[in-house]
Image (cartoon, rainbow, N blue to C red; front, side):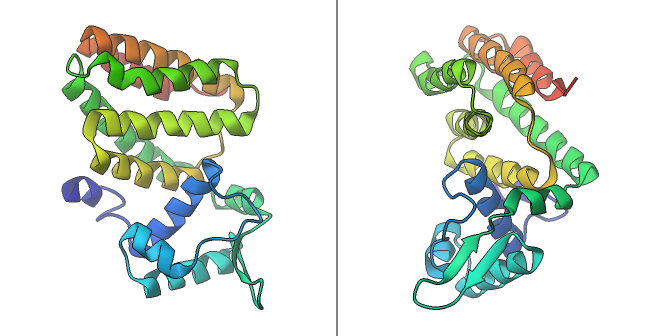
Length: 221
């Protein structure tokens, strides 16, 4: 894991960047929503395995950027800004995103090549459930949640909890750098998800890796 993280952004995320990316990922997954109060700094520090002062400084920086709001008083705390999506849109960086996206592709191709034919069918059932739900859901926010969950769970199934953490690092940063894909793009990518799971079950390594690459190539028309 340390070696993989070292490839991220020239030495991995700083503690502050980790806080930003994980909050962004939680917003994408709707674990917290614009307007919601975040857990206390001590709770966040324990969850992320970093110091409380690092979390506090990271939250202050996010408040300065407009991603979070700080409120005082008995009902105060740190809240996800109601204008979260508007602020994120201003912060997007296609060049930085392309580098991270390429690394994510490399990670997934490696995991798929390593695990192809070695994963029991029952371990893929949760992923198949996500594919099925993606096919029928209409709500754009829910589609994004399911797409993100698919890649987090794929990393864990094929590589364990440590690889899920690495995927969370990448996906959280990409949430801040790229616009959310349109529903039509997500549905097309879901076809690649289904193909990937079929080829993983069959043990067809080349075709499974091809499905991962095809997923990345799906772009807005």
